[in-house]
Length: 86
Image (cartoon, rainbow, N blue to C red):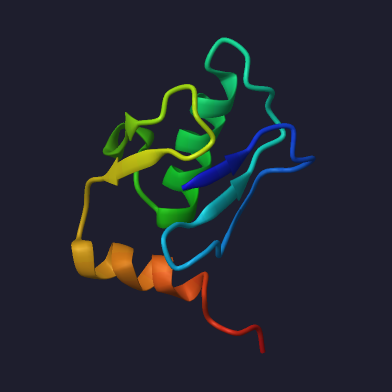
């Protein structure tokens, strides 16, 4: 996940083939952006916050997250970010 803190508003979008992209209104201070990212991902994927874990990238823009849940459903939701807008 490539994260842009202070991005104006919270949004999860398609990134590159390697990762999704997230814009966060929160500043990268005292873990606020990481907390906002976990909340945004949990909301978008329809899982509780405790199901989203920041695995790597605590202080980096590129982060690795683990999301607990049905892998097929989670993959379908992630793929929908890359679907062309109709």
